[in-house]
Image (cartoon, rainbow, N blue to C red; front, side):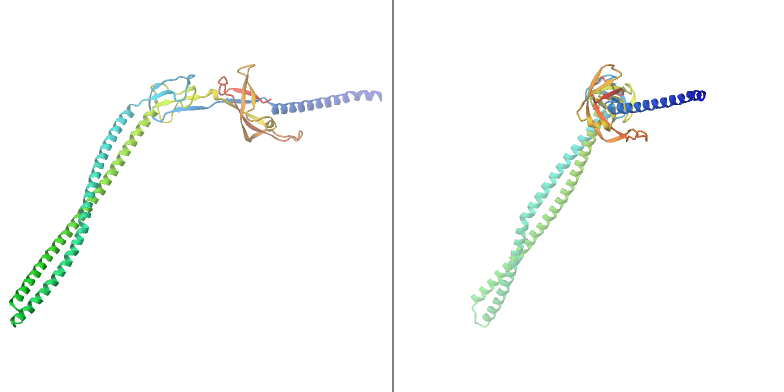
Length: 373
């Protein structure tokens, strides 16, 4: 029995050793996972430095006649950095200016024609107004006078015939007959005068019609002059617009820095032909840089806007930079790690946190680490 137990003892020990090794490995893996989770949750967090950058592009195609900056140069906003050949545009500016002057002269001529037409229309209107009412009244008076003269002449004729019969019968004297004859002659003369007055009134009425025709002609001439003036004004405005467009394009031949910063790329050389939209230079505002880092949700309670943080970079060993939290994304980006059945943890989501650096020492593209503690 004793010999049998001694033979089984080495196998038992081997099983114990294997169990102990597995237990230690499990403890080690659990410790690593806990350490990883703690590191993941506490940081520091890595991110790449970014900075605003813009391309200086050209709206006007042509040859670069001046290139005033090089890579690494600092530029101020609005500083002249390049110039495109403007020879053709200068010629177009002269032609457009001449067109504006010609259109302006044509407009002034049309304006003078409009003023003359308005004066003629006003004169015809005044002449018509002066005679229109009087002509109507005169015609009415002449017609009434003619009717009365006809009645008087008829009555005088009847009286003369009656007196003549009485004279022949000895019932009237020669003097009475002469008086009746004279009244008849006067009535006939008045009738002829009334007819002449009516003819004159009708002639005056005809003159009114002439004035009306003259006014209609003057108004038509005014309308034509107004149309000419409007056309001339439109041509003048078009010429001015074309001139403004040419001058605006001339301004575009002088390329200026859209913001202050550092020239980080120069893509053309002086004398090179460029096309519309081609980037000549790239300007980066290195003093307005920032870094985006992914922070697990378990850290968000310790982070607030305007919180000052510490930033380090492998490019500056032992040096610490200051940063400030300027934005926290309200939407999660991804799960930092996923749960396992053994651990039973839940996913921890990561949120983007923007940290403003505003330090030109940290160049765009550098990797830095942000510590929120």
